[in-house]
Length: 274
Image 1 (cartoon, rainbow, N blue to C red):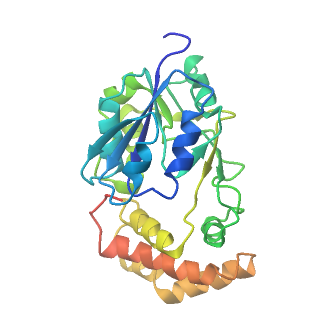
Image 2: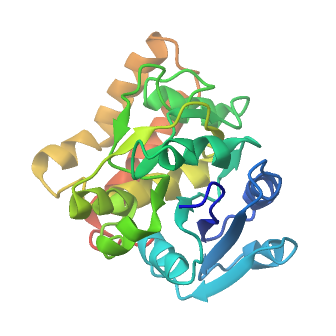
Image 3: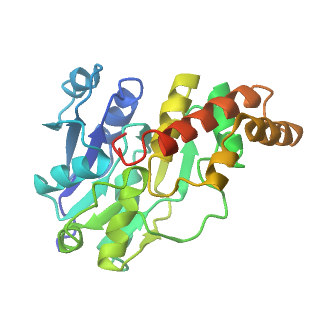
């Protein structure tokens, strides 16, 4: 492998007009210059496509199938030896790609992830509630003591991605962990690869995000699952976390979040697309 191999950055996009400018501008200003940026529009109905056209990126289009299919499509058109998977609701430090691929270039691993993932909008009350729901401070998307290996790759040698024949496309929220199982490899942490994730910043975003999570294979329809997301249990958990320091608005958040989970699990189960 060359010292400065081409890196292909693949970004699935579905109705991300609110955050897409921040994402693309940060990726276009990377200190690692040997890269191409591939945006896969997953059937967006907002202004996402118009925003993408402002940047020097390759734009691909598909019907609304889901993120796994979008990533697979992007890689199929990628020219790089290393694939970096980016999300449209994340903005990236200028050294992100360079730091992320450094362990791969040193032949320490075939793939990496970052645990230095912070929150881009910690001042937003619903973002704070989202973090509180995961027992995290407002500024962190992952805990400080997060483990050093992960089954989700943020960067991987393209040869290994092709060996595993890409992501499964019917697992929704957890489709990005399917590749690790197929190639029997895990990603290692890349020190200094810093990024900032936009948490949902409105109650409507909270609902749609939790509904998407609920659709995934992580959750099965059962009486126990049903009871977990009933309003009475939402109120019980909400009161407990408010007593522990969550914002007062957390009660409203929790009712909306759990309703989204309930709808995803019990009414949209099997429909994995975001």
